[in-house]
Image 1: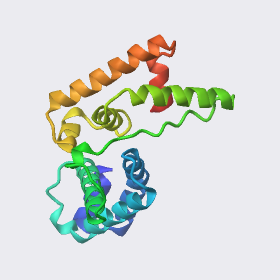
Image 2: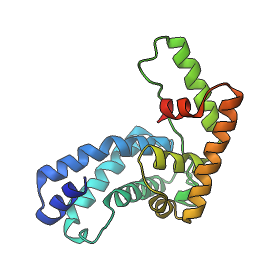
Image 3: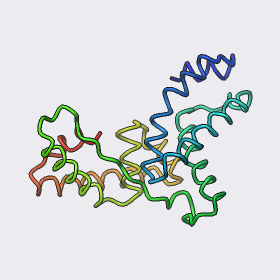
Image 4: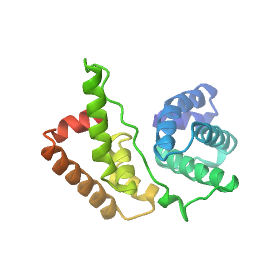
Length: 190
């Protein structure tokens, strides 16, 4: 995707811009709804973000990590939309709760088993703090490294490592008690 970003930034290639949009739209939408924001707010934030990227293309050449830039701008845009709508907003963007919508693999045969596993996984994830869920999502779903996550979450790299480690440790403890392996849990969730 880095080549596509560069092609858009350097040449203003419309097909590269379209490809960027298509690549990120579902990821950003999932990320936004993971914070519990409505679909409308997420769609608005995505549109605003890509409009801004299009308008400011000539000023974005110095960005070394476009994926982090896109996710951070999207998160900030959601926060700004909420502020502008004068709803009660947490003190900072770092305090917005993060939720992971659990989707169980479609190839499970029995619907009851699927519902049961989904409920258990949702329960295990609810044991984590919002920032732990966000860090785990960014690391395992979006494949950001710890340094990128630290920048996005405005914290230290070691704090991110600790959040992920403790979150997985807590999940592992509870999945062992529930006779569900951590690897199955991660495979189902992520």
